[in-house]
Amino acid sequence: MPFVHWTILVLNVVLSLLAAGHALFFKRTPQSALGWVAVSLAFPFVGPVTYFLFGINRVQTRAQKLEDKHPPHRVEPGGGRSIDTLKYSFSELELSRAAKEIARISDNVFRMPLVGGNRVKMLHNGEQAYPEMLETIENAEDRIFLCTYIFDTDRSGRRLIDALAAAADRGVKVCVIVDGFGELYSRTRASTLLQKAGVSCARFLPPRLLPLPMLHINLSTHRKILIADGELGYAGGMNISDRHMAEDLYNRKRVVDTHFQISGPVVRQLEQSFIEDWAFCKGEILEPTNTPVRTRGLAVCRTLVDGPNEPVNKLSTILMGAISAARRRVRIMTPYFLPSVEMISAIQIAVLRGTRVDIVLPSVNNLPYIQWASNNMLWELLYWGANVYFQPPPFVHSKLFAADDEYAQIGSANLDPRSLKLNFELNVEIFDRETTEAIAAHIDERIDRSRQIFLEDIDKRPFPAKTRDALMWLFSPYL
Image 1 (cartoon, rainbow, N blue to C red):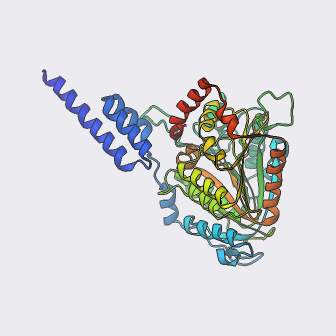
Image 2: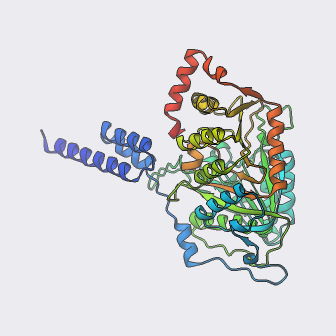
Image 3: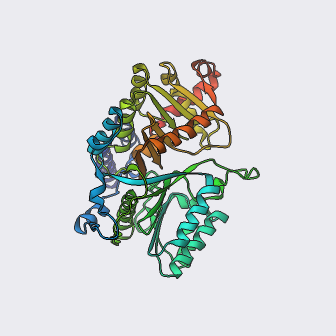
């Protein structure tokens, strides 16, 4: 065999072994490790190159390192209160034992503290959320930070771009992060229009081929937050797009969703999360708001930040902890439902313990392959008595979690592997009976309009549908 052929053969073997070894030692789940090991060994050269492009998490905690060098300013008493005086430990919450157990778990998992004095307001669809966001931008005096996954350049998107540009023109510091992959949903990129309008904009891990290929399809920022002057914030699952104008019956792509306006000390945590992401994207340190914190309500909250750069799946851990701690009722609303084996077990045990678990899903999904995979595993929950409901169209994109009318989570994370393992997500946990009851009432209202699914409905699916669903379920760790 010619020397060149031997060289190519040896190179292929070395690359395959290196890729397989890296996957074996650094992948978090056996399914992912086994899949990449098989690809790397079965397809010489192509397998290792594919793993190099798509399988390696190159996201480094550069923002956290920058934060260590430049720690955030501590706010001091003056015209308001120090944030330190508003911190809570789980033992100080005047809630049930179950809620305190949840708080104790999140205390040990997340680095940001619980802070009191917050107010949370639910907003339905773009009709309620976008006017509030526009008014907040128009009234901002010092700074505006915005991060979103999809920023369409349709009518809703351009109104927001115009408002941001006007704020920048009057001297407000405006910084916008748009996901590099998510912005491709629009032909005209929002980042292009923003930069032309003089707004400082960063693209989070944009795909590129040169000088070094970067195709981080599975490493997106899915966070959706807006912060103005460190005082008023927005978080939830709503992107910026006309599709969220759900009350327009002529909108053929309409999507139902919820977003939340937040005021109080926890907004500083939203701001800190943005500052870290901005440092990662731009290498620039933004100074945190250093004015005294003002209380706005009675809710005790914490920002929950998670991503593939974390050593453990934090959001998944706290959600399973909340399901396990709840004693009366758990309500889950999500558009994409592919829970891990561990979360399925937590739900099953909660039901067997006597806790009512209601899971509300869309009857028609914008990503049908996820719905097919979900259908294949629903029997595991229905068999033990969990309640599953399918909401009628239009597609419902809301992501809500409530436990025992005392604890709630809102934010960007779905209950699927992409959100809980691959994406950069941001949720806010809320310890407040009034807010949680409002969220629970909204979920109950949707349940009343939904069709309950029973075990026999899953069993009587036609054989071709069962086969399709099972095949999609095989790929659920990668969907």
